[in-house]
Amino acid sequence: MYTMSEPQELLSRVNQDVLIEIIEVLRRTGGLHELSQTSRRVRAACMPILFRQCFRIIQVPLPDPRTFMPHSLWLHVQSLVLQDDCPDRLAFHSLRYTDNRIICGALSEPLLNQGLSGMPLLRSVTIYQRGEEPHGLSWPALRAVMSHPVIREFTLDRLHFCPVLRPSDELHVDSLAPLDTFRYLFRTPERLSFIPESRAPKPNFDDETAALDAVLGALHNTLKVLYLLSEVVPVRAISQHPWPCLRRLVLRGKPSEALVSSLLSTISHIQTLRSLVLKFSPIENTRRGVLWLGNAVAAFPCPALEEFVLTYPDPEDQTFAHLPPTLLSLSLCCWHHLYHDFLDTNRSSGLPYGLGFSLLLNSSALRLMLHRAHTPLLVRLTLEYRAGDGDEELLDHISRSYPQLTYLKFIRYRRRNTDEVPVEHIAHALTPLSRLYELKLHLDLPEMPMRGVTLMYGIRGGYSTAELKRFRVVVNETADLFARELGSSVRFLSILTPTAHPSCWACFEVIHRRAVPKDD
Image (spheres, rainbow, N blue to C red):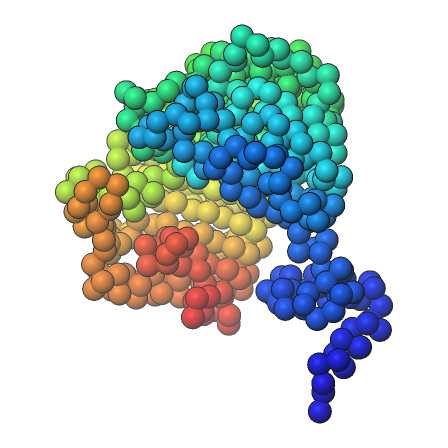
């Protein structure tokens, strides 16, 4: 019979490299905490793994910035995530830590400067808020983070980047760390805030652009990944610097027409770019314009591009006729996908996909756009469109033109005033894709339930339990049909459904041409 000391003795004789491997396995399976309590040696070995990723909620300015995390952990932290929960960001709170609601007083320069200074292994810092209230970090606070010499990744998520420059702020950037990843992003096209727009403080986009211009001017030699809010893209910094390492550029938000029309010429000198992601939201239910019209540019600026994402593509855009044959991943869709409007709406609205439905390309326009592009090496494809007279030709083009596809996200909306969805025909049309490994589907099935009437602001109505059960049967049958048709290659299937909370996707594994639910 084993005693408590025997497993401890066995662990003490384990080679250190083997022990680290055991710890890594237990970290992934959730047993690391118990192991860390077995012996002092094991606990010491667990510390760098247990605490290499740390999370902290910041609600108030700390009296001593060095106490925001136990000092014994500092030497182990490699990735730090800070959630800004400052009460000043909410309109129904009186100001406590700042004189300007849009500037966070809790995440201050002393906290970030002194708090990070004792973390020699720190590589990544993420600062975010859960909502999207108009709130952000001051220039001194941002500079304190980005000047920490060992970090290489900085992410500002749903918080504004220097939304106001104070008279005392000077845009000195001499001491910035050589970052290789800089992300400044918001998650949704619409800012999700509880503050009424009439009362919400407004960020100064000119100040944000000026601060970003200074920062990116200092980082252009080292950055490999760059995410920016499109309202504040510093065009001068991007167009005037060489960017020798930049491989991924992501722009999200509501760009000006001038930015859209000049973008390709702005990045024409960045030959290293491999991924270009443009998630532009529409304005007043019109598209944002075209990237390439007439003689705007002489040639596509990214000759080795491998990923291209464009929301609300315009049939007049000549970009597609000039995409390089190196392209491996293409996404032409909405942002966000219109099916989110379906899931968030109620029966009384009469607009299950909202006004954005009119901006969707029909199947004929989408096929013509794809036909202009010569991209035979595509392995990933995402399409969002509405059914039309060109459905047959579009499906035929997909199956013939992209023989290397391993991933397809296929979002098709029915014509208005019809319940017809040719599920079997769609499945059969995709059978030539012999390398297809994963398929995600939204076919706008008429049986898909809608939410009930919204009870009050911010609380959505629920689904009928009976409708959910009936629809799950339809989803399972649809998955089985695709598994039978595509089972020789497809391994994973997903179908959009409100029954698969919280992901909204019912996931299946294809085994012997049967779709087996992964949540069973």
